[in-house]
Length: 254
Image (cartoon, one colour):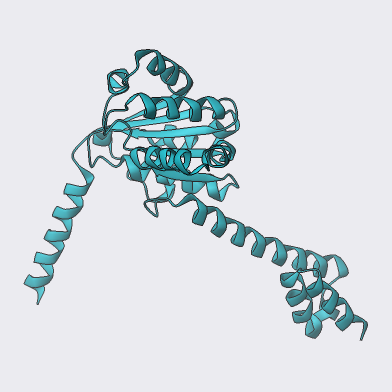
């Protein structure tokens, strides 16, 4: 009776996994010490909460690709050093509030790389959020128009890792440049930013309409950033060719 009361109390305290674990121990309690039983219960609760927490973080992150560090291709022609990337994937740069800049031609795997880093960050307990840069700026502009701008900027400020993909794909006018500056300034020394761009960093200044604001943006974004330059043939093209080759082989086999 006392055991059932304990289980009921665990459920009422929303310790569901511990309650289920304790209930499942009834048949073999004699073979386990108190410390072992307690450890199994706590482990079960911990694992369930960690799994739910990770699911929530990934859902909020809205990553464009289900990328993982473990599935990255580290071929020499890509210009991607495995040791350096895996070191970066430990996510100490987030703790230090430093940034990461990934540049390279279209199809070189930039988006996959930044999503893999964000996925690992979520697994380590950090919050993340992915945006295409142009879409984020449009969303900020709409937030200003409907009065939700302060709330949106506060939410963006609190994210541990902000991903800005396709940076500079479209030139930044003065209003967009001002919004970027406000965002980066609010996050300075509070969070990290990962930027992916087809344009080399040396060409970023020219994409921002106001030179003064451009200086301020680059000062906050570039100078404390780790830089990755991706090279080689388009990964999309290679994957398409591989898929076509696999299809032809399947037809031949039939």
